[in-house]
Length: 249
Ligand SMILES: NC(=O)c1ccc[n+]([C@@H]2O[C@H](COP(=O)([O-])OP(=O)(O)OC[C@H]3O[C@@H](n4cnc5c(N)ncnc54)[C@H](OP(=O)(O)O)[C@@H]3O)[C@@H](O)[C@H]2O)c1
Image (tube, rainbow, N blue to C red; front, side, top):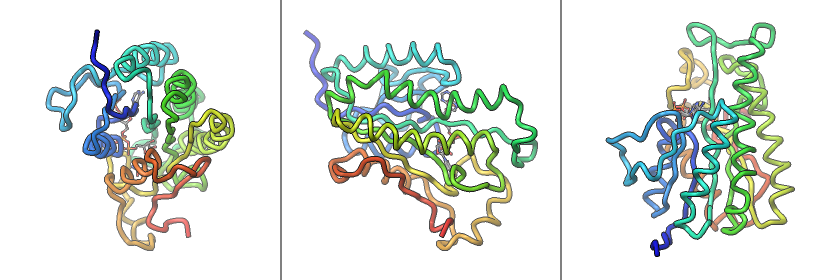
């Protein structure tokens, strides 16, 4: 009989760089098993202790691919007694015009708008519903990664991105109401300007107006995600924590 893996388990989308990368490192350090999901193959030079058995190649812009990934994740969770302690919906796309300028509501092609909503909004609820039984068994936690752009017009973030993140923030509330009675907490984190590849040229001008006068670091975001998946936040659900150095005060 196969041995049971007693580590807590996280399923994390978009771990290959940026905030997701810092998150997988943080959870691994705490002894969690992290099943990562992104379009890339498993990186042989993976900087945390993991193997291909903990990586799933999935294109979240394809509903069919997400369905296949859910079945594969459920299969791999068998080693954990079908328990999933956390799901972090971190992967997102933020299409921009040339030179990184904002793609506004008059010019965003409808197909692009649909793709953004599939990756940023539909994939999170598909994963949470598909893994509901495993989350319930572990009395687990879901964290949706939203954005400061979901609450106000941002100089670089496009309309499709902003509206998908606003929808994800609403979905977080709805999910908290629906998942709570089953013992599953659902929260969101809304990053501001975090030092990753998603930022546009010109962000340094925004930083001059942020009260803390600097970009956020990916590790600072990972710390809050970890807090929301830990017992330290056991009475927190339906919340959206803003991680932005005071940018919207
Ligand atoms: N950085 C910021 O300042 C900031 C601010 C506000 C909100 N956020 C949010 O924070 C989260 C992470 O942002 P980040 O800056 O770390 O992003 P990033 O560096 O652009 O990384 C995005 C991740 O998502 C994955 N991904 C993208 N499209 C995918 C697809 N179709 N299927 C599967 N995986 C896909 C990418 O992996 P592959 O390329 O391997 O597929 C990558 O790992 C996002 O939700 C973003 O909206 C970031």
